[in-house]
Image 1 (spheres, rainbow, N blue to C red):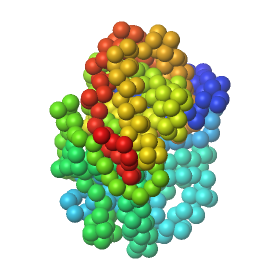
Image 2: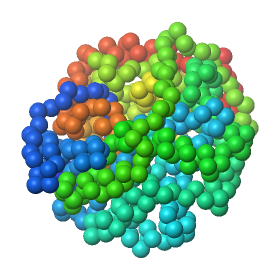
Image 3: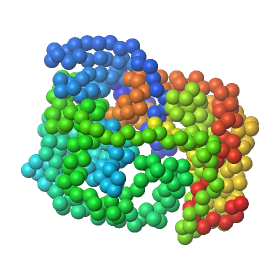
Image 4: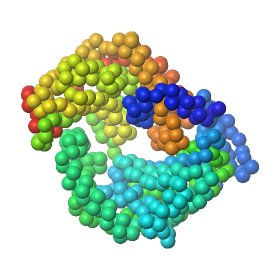
Length: 470
C-alpha cells in the first residue's frame, strides 16, 4: 500500500472541503530540500533505479538510456498512465517583438503531426482514449498526456510523432491568431489583467515579465517561426519527466526515449533576471478607470523567497490572515461583519524570480474607501496582536488535512511531482511537508506577523471607478 492509494482514500474522506482546498494544495512548493537517503537497485534491462521509500509514496528515480531523468510512481491498481514533461524556458524567452511565440508553440503540439492533420490527430487521440496537450508559463514549457495502460504504447507513439514531425499547419495557426486577437480585445475590460499590468509597470517595467502580447507581435508570428522556436524550447538537456501509472521503469523508459529522440540536444535561451521588490519599492495607490459597478482592489507587499527560514511560518500565517476562506481574519471582518465584499483573499507568490505577499477583493465603487480602511485596520490588528493558539491549530489542521486532495488522480500526482522537481524541493518533500507545517511555533507566527503585515508596507491598485480613497 506504499503508493498513493492510502492518500486517495484520505482525500475522499475529506468530502466537501475539496473545492476550497485544491488550490492551496496544488501551489505548495514552499522550500528547498536536502536530498534524502535512498535505496539503489539495478534492473534486468540495465536501468539504475533509485527508490525513495517514503511514508508518503515510493518514487522510483532513473535516467533512461537516452539520458532523460524520470520520477515514477508505479500504481498497479489504476490502469491509467499519466506523464508530465517540462522544459525550463517559456514565455519570458520570447524574442522582443515576437511575444506570444512560446504560446504558439504549445498551442500547436496537438494540432497535427506527420501525415495526420489537426482533425485526424484529434480523432486518433479519441480512438486511443487519451489526452495530450502543452502549455507555456513564464519560465517553463510543459506537456502532459494521460492514457489507458493497455493503449500506452500506441498513445506514446502518437505523442512521439508530435515531437518528431509537428505540422504547424496554416489552418490551426490562423485559428490561434484569431483567438489571440479576441484575447487582446477582452483583456482591456478584465480588471485582474489591468491590475497585473499596473503592478508590472510600477515594479518591473523593463523586466521580461512585463512584456505583453500585442497586435503587432501576433501579426509578426508565423508557423515557420513557431516551428523553429519549438526546437529551442524543447531540448533533451532541459527535459524532466514525472509519471504515475501501472507501468514499470523498464516499460516506461523506451516510451520516454521515443518522445525525446527527435529533440535537439541543447539550445541557448536568455536567462530571466530576478525582480527586486523591497519595502522601499512601495508605490502610491494606482487607480485605473474602468466603468463598472464594482472596483477590484489589489494590494501587495514584499514577500519571501521559499529558501527564507520564515517562509513556512508566513505560509501558515497567511491562512489566518486571508488565505483560509471564511476562516480568515479578512473575510470575517470585511465580508461577515461589515458586508463590504463577497470575498477577499491573500496569498504568497514565491516565483523564483519574483516574490510578493498580496491579495485582493471586489467591492462597490462607493465603498472602496471603507474597504481599504478596513483592510488596513485588520492588517494592523494582526500585526500588533498576532494570532491565537486556536487559530494556529486550525490553520495547521486545514493545511495538512487538505493536502491529500491534490493526489486523487494519477495526473494530479504526476503534476505534484513535477512541481517538486521544478522547484528543486527534493524527492522527500511529500514526506516532510506536513511535518514542517506542524513545526511552526506560535511565537514565530506572531513575530512574522509583526514584521511583514504592517499596513504601511502595502501598496494598492484599484481598477474601477472608486470613491472615498484618500
